[in-house]
Length: 163
Image (tube, rainbow, N blue to C red):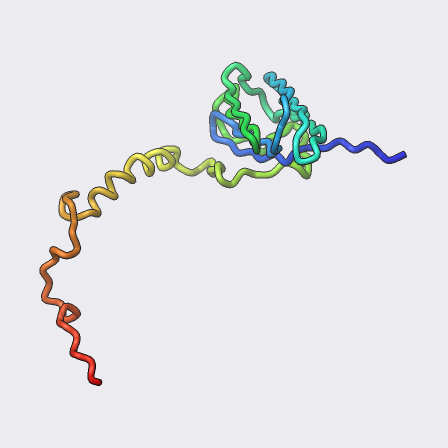
């Protein structure tokens, strides 16, 4: 008889002072069974090409507020936005247990260091469109490169080709 192994989906996480992001990477997930309380997240579902059963039992480092959790199930992953019970310094790790499981990874696309400015995170997107409008010409006016009046020597005509 073969040994029965428990399968765990690849899971990414990131945090801010007030929240956690968890992404369970499991394609073609069928009817996930999800249980979130103030100390843990339990997940079980069939998924992947072969529709095998995957499970997670994550015991958080500190308490979270399950009432303020948002989740989104897509064809490729299940994403969670989980509010920490107490805003404060970053947790040293996601789980209560210091030993990190092999299926748990840092989500570098969402990660920000604790000493990074939160304002920097939001204002860059807000100012992008205004910056692009100003780059179009003087005071954001429409810019037509054919209207440029320049005494640049590159504007001289090319000599005729000799046969």
